[in-house]
Every structure is written in C-alpha cells, then in structure tokens.
Length: 83
Image (cartoon, rainbow, N blue to C red; front, side):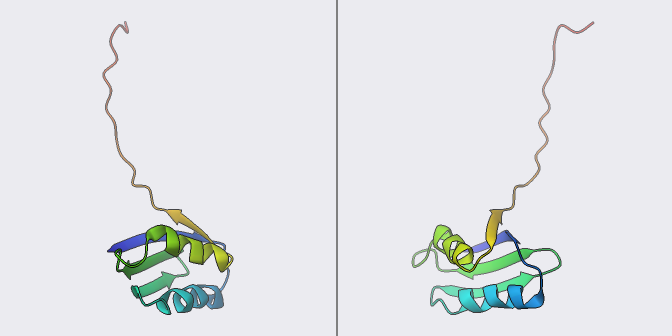
C-alpha cells in the first residue's frame, strides 16, 4: 500500500532524514521518503505486516506529528424558498 501524510514539527534536513531512517528500518516498510519543503511523507508498506496506525505511532515516538491529507470536495446543495 502507498500512503501520503503530512508530518508537522520538522525544522531541518536532519528531522526529515530521521523519519526516513526510522521507517526504512522496519521490515514491512518498502520505502519511506520525506520532502522537508512540502512536509510530505510518501511511504510504501506491506499492510498485512504493519498498519498505517503503527507507522503514525512510530512518527509520534520520534517527536513529530503525522497528519492525514484530506482532499477538498465540492458539494452543491440546492436551496429552495429564497426570493
């Protein structure tokens, strides 16, 4: 499975490297890469061996805050009775 998360709390390249190193040490993580500028973590993992919650917990234990990326959606609602 591939997932993209925002990681808050990073202030330097050492921070992003630390997250990559910690996640890439896990056998079930196939690849983890962090873009410090955009704060995005791209992680590919075996969801049968590790859950996204486990990955998030690992990030929190390292001192950072993982945030799910929420896609913007447009909702059109008709409003009746306005004159």
